[in-house]
Picture: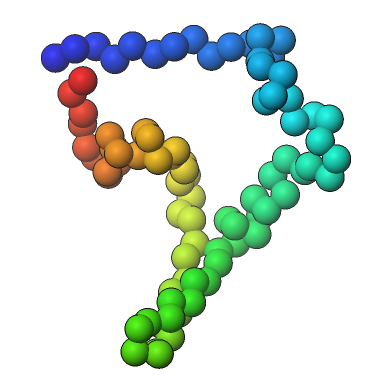
Length: 82
């Protein structure tokens, strides 16, 4: 089994200029965080013309993974070999 190699996270002063969002007008960190944690509904319109509604709420301790990471961890119990 190979060991995973992780890149060091750059310090703030090493951040690329295009990632500096502090100067964006109207940008608010976590603007929708509370609303998303409170839950949301999704309306699914089916080909037959019917609509189904599903409600989603994050469980306590949920961590959202980026899609490139998620493909390696399909569940919290899964172990991955590199």
